[in-house]
Length: 86
Image 1 (cartoon, rainbow, N blue to C red):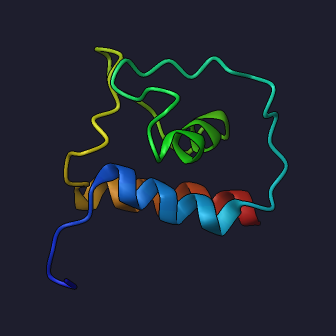
Image 2 (spheres, rainbow, N blue to C red):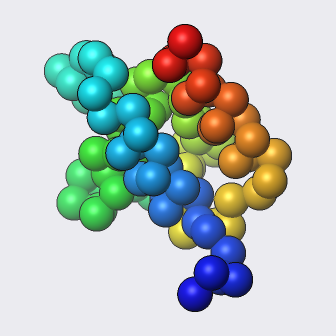
């Protein structure tokens, strides 16, 4: 469904696939978004991008993975990835 909006979670997983080869300290397990449990299908991607500083949660400690990603959020995410790949 190409017209269907993309969620923050889906965009994070897509971005993670782009940067999978970049080194990241996987030992750090300080990613504590209260709405992203370790058994969530996207947890590893969200945690990896958070460790890289590419994605952040909200001040209330949530990530809101099922919310539709805004254009502004997507632009920031893409800009962060481009910066890492330089």
